[in-house]
Amino acid sequence: MEAFLLISALVGALILLYRYATAFANYFNQRGIKYRKPTFLLGNLGPILFQRTTPVANLTDLYREFAGEKVYGFYEFRRPTIILRDLQLIKRVFVKDFNHFTNHTAPVDEHMDSILGNGLISLEGQKWRDMRAMLSPMFTGNKIRHMVPLVGKCAEDLCRFVERETDEVEWDVRELLAKCLVEVIGSCAFGIEVDSFNDPDNEFDRVAKYLMNQSDVRKVARFLLIMVFPKMCKQFGMELFDDKYKRLFRRLVSETMLKRESDGVSRPDLIQLLMLARRGKLEADKDVEGESFAAANDYLETGTDDVKRSWSDDELTAQAVIFFAAGFDTTSTLLSFTLMELAIHPEIQDRLFEEIKSVQRSDSVISYEQIQSLEYLDAVISESLRKWPPLTATDRKCTKDYLMVDPEDGSPMFSIEEGYSVWVPIYCFHHDPKYFPNPEKFDPDRFNRVNRHQLNPAAYMPFGVGPRNCIGSRFALMSAKMILLRLLRSFRVEVCPKTDTTLQLSKTKMNMTLEKGHWVYLKRRS
Image (cartoon, rainbow, N blue to C red; front, side):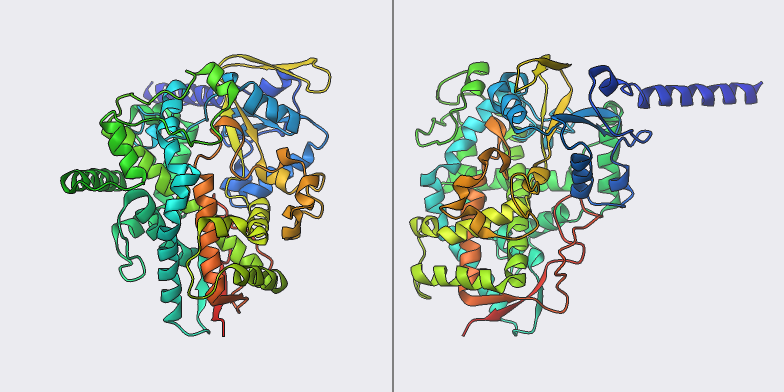
């Protein structure tokens, strides 16, 4: 009898699991959308999870399989997701009809994780708009201009650190740049001097190492469980971000605010914005550019009224965490791949060095205006963002039922119900020869003054699309240009025995990084 009950319970559990895993099996068939048959529970992510391919190779394989389609289906584990392959559809969904797709598909919400769930990426609706309006003043041209000397000092620290060693030292520039970027974020966001090169065990460095370590089995397991069984994980209180680092950020933000209040110090950085927001004294910045998305303002509260919402300590701390994580990963990816390309293509590096020499003597201080005037530097950075975009895909969650129509003739295609998601495979568009001829070639001249006007701007989206694009893109670009400029002024980047000139991406990491590391020589210029 006991054996019968046990077998019955097991069979019942298996039936429930099967029904759970296949609940959306007919989603794409019912809508006439082509898709690749999913694997049980894993969807179309199996090749990535079993490390048979890289995330971008998996994306690209599907993109090519459904060439000629405007959309196709993708199973993110058991969840059906619609991939947009048509630029007109992307503009319609992400910009024109933004009021139907206002949110990201965040793996956690504020009730599941009080820090990550309250970050700008995870916030929804009016709360997202208020938070974005609160943070936007930090990224105006005026504020970025004041940060140039701070980033310049961090770049000087980087160069002095490299100068301690001989020319024959091989550098993994991703790890080297991580130290510099920890200093940049510490200075520009928190107003804290972080001496990463002389104190490698400081708190900011420990957070950076935690974020960079994507081979941590516990982190990966937590992520997979939350993605596959979100409701169950919510009930058990499982969180993505380690408690130890939450406590660290809470303390850093709290202590920095208290010290400034007691000392009467004011700085143009993130902490100052958070302090003003907490006191309800934050005013709208009239210098904010790029925030006038009509669709977003039609759906949400309009205008540029002062942000008077009351924010909790965790909501404010969450922005510091997101700024650190996003700023660190985006800029380190951009710079490390740029340096690899310059080592492999010395003729491009030489041309860039000549431009740098034309505006800056070895003893002069570079200004924001000079950085902006360097056209070839901008072209190099733009091409690096095309070929190696830190953001390989972006998404939106449908917030109210939507009828997708053909952009060419206006005929109805299918309906998307509230709660389902759409993706844009940014990496695939950046590597599509239809939009960028010979896409595997690193060619900054695509973005020179003449050629850039021949490109389809809608196909280039390194910082996302529409009102929920990356708020810190201007800061990331300035930081990357400043660090690259200062590094190339003193050093020539060359291939070394450890350099993988094929630039094979890692199959074991979810972000853009090379399988064999970013190894180069940094040789002093005479």
